[in-house]
Amino acid sequence: QVQLAESGGGLVQPGGFLRLSCAASGRIVSVGAMGWYRQAPGKQRELVATITAPGTTTYADSVKGRFTISRDNAKKTVYLQMNNLSVEDTAVYYCNADVRTTLFRLEAYWGQGTQVTVSP
Image (tube, rainbow, N blue to C red):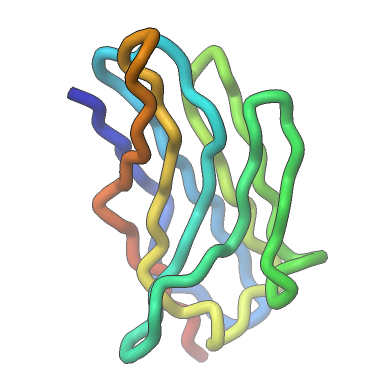
């Protein structure tokens, strides 16, 4: 079994910042790409940012220049530094990771989600 444990969500004012963390644990051979997605009320889940094992990153246009994704491969952890937050960033943020549990088994796993609320 593989678990993704997220932390770091909360309530912040516009212009503020938060840092999300997501640690993978369990029977893991290796972790491939990791990423963050978010889902606002009444909207579909959308990609926020991804990072490959070597460190190549992609971002949604809406967060470029404000959010930074990074990872610590030794800790099997991905981070999302979110700066200059706006009310439009309010959502449940989900961690995602491609995890190899055997030489022949690679699956995508999701965290349980962490709430980020940006409000005056």
